[in-house]
Amino acid sequence: MAGEAASAAALAAAKTPDAPYASARSAAKAVMGGAEIIVTTEQGKALPGPSGLAFIAGPGQVVRVTVSMTARSLLGTPVGLGETTVGAEAMASRAGVAALTERTTAVPELPAVPAAIEARLFGSAGALAADERVMLGRVAFRVADLVTELGHVLSTREGGTEAGVAAVAEASFKPAEFLSALAALYRESARTSAEAAKVLDVISRLAGAGATDEVPLPFAGVISLAGEDADLTLAAPLRPLEFIQAVMRARLAQGAVSVELRSPVTGVDEVTLTLESEGASASVLIGGENGLVGIPSIRIASRFVIGGLSIPGAGTLELPLEVKLSSGDARIRRIACGPNGPEVAVTGRPVRASVAFAAEATASPAGASDYVRLLAAGGLTAWGKGRSAFAEDPPVDLVFRPGTGDTVASLRAPIDFSNRLERLAAETQVLVSLEGTGREAMSEGGVRDEIARLIAGSVKPVEAVLSSVFATFGIVPGKMDVVAAGAACNTATLLGEAK
Image 1 (cartoon, rainbow, N blue to C red):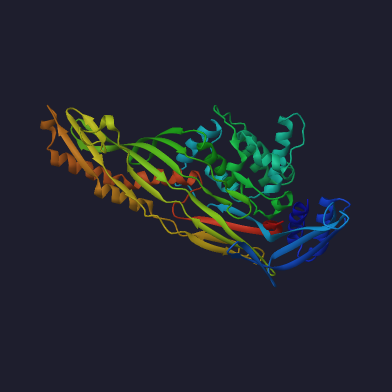
Image 2: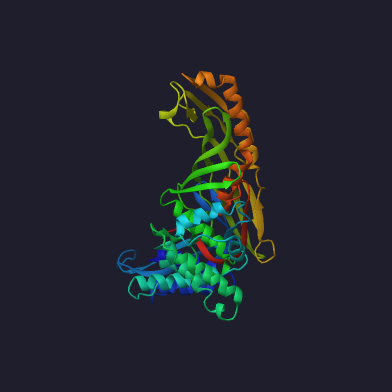
């Protein structure tokens, strides 16, 4: 038991640097019961050595605690009875908890795009108007209050059993439950505030919009909680719009979602979008080292129908495009607990984007499976291939000192997605097949030129649709704002134990 007592004592001493001995002795006695023990504490550093960590006494954030006691021994003296000293030591370092929040500045250019996606995810009444989106991005709520409301939801679901923070952190909730809990936060203030009343109405409408395929979403895929109850206060206030976007991203991890839009912008007759994600990433983190917030990777399979094609017998062109958004995240690399307060080192990488023609083997010409069919009419068939991507960036390192005003930073700057589409248009390779009456319509070179003209002219409207999709989910490729609003050195990590 001496080893267990030493570990408990070391952790207690590291958590309370102002009174390490008293805390260590109290923790050790709790383990050893009424046994007479001797407790010693030392402050210093732990450095790697040939046989493990070596303790160096002096200034530092590491505490070494030794717990010893005298025990009866049947051997060891001429008459057979005696006493022996039993002891153990352990080292612990002071550690911290920090709160990170992913913050968005994304604004959809085309209102019809987010409206279609939101109606698909939340139900027919779930589409947000432009002014509602602005309003939900202007107000804020406390993460701690949301967790409390979700605890009530969980308690009701489980027959009245009180649900604490740990239970909420491990639970799953349907989107309507997330939204109902969010709406409850504005019920009281709605009695005296016209804006709060409008916020309540909008969120309540989304919660009751009647989604047909609601699936439970892990809370950890929206908000990641790894600290104690009191640590919830460290998180920055969250805006309802950001929370709703996080719920929407988590929904994509549960299965693909498809929407169709008719004439969302001049130049696009119709477009079909299928969105899916390989996993979910929390938009808020309260935790320690290696915890992260961010955007999950998202795949968008799209099929654009572009009008205005000047080829006899063919008035439209199909552009089957596959867009891949790589995951972007900010990870806590280190929380340094020094005499001047916590310092949070974060390493991050923003979302990157690639776009390519989505080749279909069944629609490709023989021996060219990486081509995709662009049009087929009257003996004329055309295929195209191409790809454009941004190179991966090295990680960005940030240092936050919560409490000093240094709490917000951006991971790089937005990328010009239209530039990727322009490059794709310029480098697209087109194959043309003319059969029967198709030979009389236009030459192969003329077909290729007309297709190249229409693809180049579609760049701006296609970019407007895709960028609006990104913004609907709170994504700006190349850029992600990170908020580190609070941190506390209120925990400890066991470093070593010797028996």
